[in-house]
Amino acid sequence: MLLASCGISQDGAAPPYTPLPANLTAPILPPQPGSEPGALTWGESLELNVVLYGVITRVNCERALIRQIEKQRQDPAADRSVVLPVECEE
Image 1: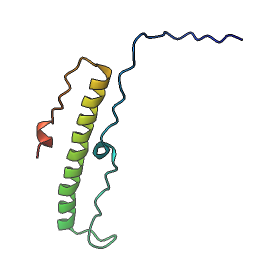
Image 2: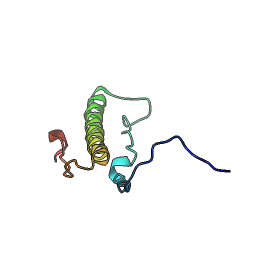
Image 3: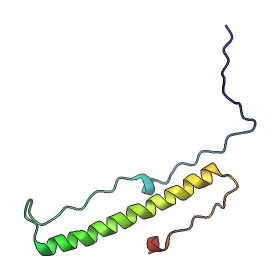
């Protein structure tokens, strides 16, 4: 029995697979609100907002880096330098 596919074959080698860095794929744990469960003071809520804003900024930076890596994977001729967004620079 002869098996054939209808797919288009590509000549040449596939680009090498580059795994994403572990720090970009690690889970980000949410901060725990308040000092006591169920009791969140006004001041603690403001502090929590600052922490949450920082977490959102970090996630957005990591997603921007992942987008750059994926763009480089799709376009082998693309520039290989990674540029951090301004808000990601420490």
